[in-house]
Length: 119
Length: 119
Image (cartoon, rainbow over all chains, first blue to last red; front, side):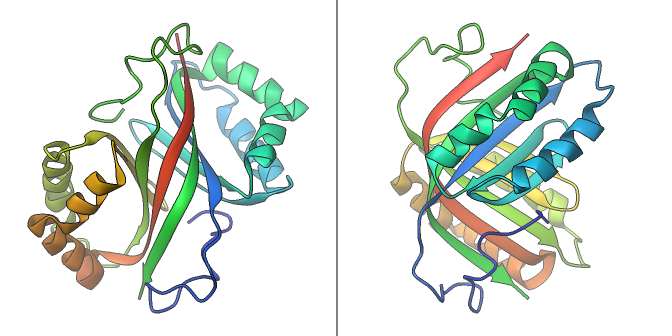
C-alpha cells in the first residue's frame, strides 16, 4: 500500500463517504527501464521521501512489473508544479532521462470521484 | 507496457504533442489481495481482454508488488459507467469482493494534460 492513502479517512462500509468529497489531483507516472538502472532504487526511495515532505502531498502508490506505475496524489495543480520544480527532483528527472528510463509518460489528472471497499 | 497507449500517436521529441490534446478519463484501481487468489489471474486476463473490446476503451497499464495498480483509460465517463455495468464484469467485481481482495480503491479521474519521453 502507499505511504499514505488519501481516502483512508473517507471510507464507510466500503462505499459511503463520511465527509464531502473534495476533488484533488493525481500525477500518473508510467515508465519502462533502460538497460542501466544503477542507482535507481536509492533515488526512487529518496524521491518518495522528499515528495512526502512537500506541501500538498496526499499519498503515493507504486508498483512495477513490465511497466512501472507511480500514482502520486496532491491537493492542487500548484503543488504538482512546485514538486516538479524542486531542485533535487529536477536532478532526479534529468538522471532518469539520461540513464534509467527508455520511455515514460506523465499524466496530470483531476480525481472527480472515489470509492473504496475493505474487509 | 499496456495493451494500447493512448498517447502513442501524440508524442514528438518526447515533449510536444503533434495533435491538440483532448481530455479523456482514467479509472485508477488500487488493491491488495486477500489470502485466497485462486482463479484471479485467469479472471484478470479475461477482464483485460473484455475491457479492450468495450466502446471508448483507450488503453490499460497494470503492475503489482505490495499493492496492485491498474490504470485504465477511457474516452468518456459514460464509457466507464457502461463498463462497470457489463454483466461479466459485474460477476468479476462480485468475486473480487467475496474472494480476491482485502481492500480496493477506485478513483475516476479526468486526464487534463500529458507529456511523454522516449529514447
